[in-house]
Length: 271
Image 1 (cartoon, rainbow, N blue to C red):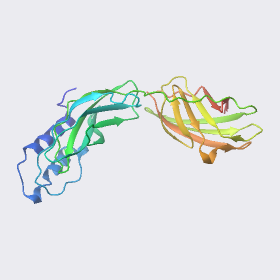
Image 2 (cartoon, rainbow, N blue to C red; image 1 turned 45 degrees about the vertical axis):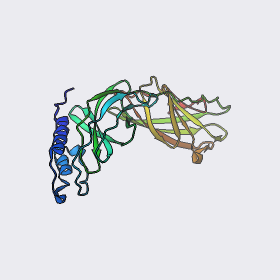
Image 3 (spheres, rainbow, N blue to C red; image 1 turned 135 degrees about the vertical axis):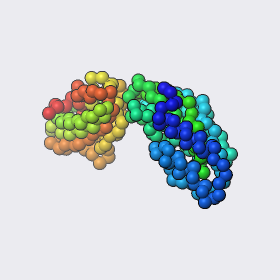
Image 4 (spheres, rainbow, N blue to C red; image 1 turned 60 degrees about the vertical axis):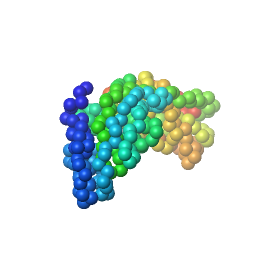
């Protein structure tokens, strides 16, 4: 990757103009922020109050990958920038097929760090970081860092013991797009006794499906299995009754159907 790509060049031009501006009257002190907003819309922010501070922060350096090894996604950190007053935040840009896009802001600290979830595990992503101060001055962008999206450490889950006399049926409806997936599951108690407390497990053929969030259950993932534990309000499923749960997930372009859905260790009939 070259620093001369259009979007990154825009950031460089904005940083150069900020550094090159000479002191101006207080009424014009918001000009640097306005110029940045015009030259780099994705980095635009509200004009700072009138100030004599026209010195930009130093360029972020020392970017390195894998600062937190158990995080499911990208995590990288860097050396803090310096400023004549104070650095207030860091804007983070990720390279896309059309240029650099702002994907988040990291707080100013002695150990600045940035994380981004929901990325494809095993794929590398390129980022640059820009420091910002309270007056709206921005630094030159950092050198790019290539960060690997990781799966994170597996979350241990208990394999439920099959409940005697329990039987269930499940309906699985999923909508997938690009690398996203939303799944809704309706579970019915087809047994002869009420279920008081449950764990629903959804097994996929591979670990390609990566959990990003869910509803109506406490969701976790271990390998290719997603597990949802009941909430307090849907703990009991009476005889013939149903409960509905669901989750969002990421995949690499192909969203397989689950191989098994089970309730408290008992395999449900998938309708």
